[in-house]
Length: 136
Image (tube, rainbow, N blue to C red; front, side):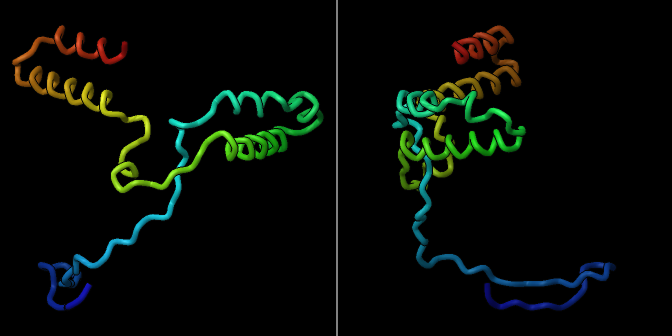
């Protein structure tokens, strides 16, 4: 930001007008954040790691908060082994991991049919058929 100027009043109110310029450009910092890559997760290993813990004995005689803390501790420790991490991509960071191309195409088609229905160019049955095909 630069060229900040404060002056004048905004109508009859007691608020002042603030003018400024926002500078765009420069280098964009690359993100070093990592996120879980659930597409490459080894769920069989998860089942093996979490199933190998004698939960009845481990949780015996503990309160709810202690049990939950112990479970989270074991789960996060196991998660480090069965879920790999990957760098966040600029585009991938903006969309949820579950939103793949096929699902996005289905959603676009449903929006298109819904828009047509709102303009009386499609029937309610066509809209319902589109919804049922998405759920299948």
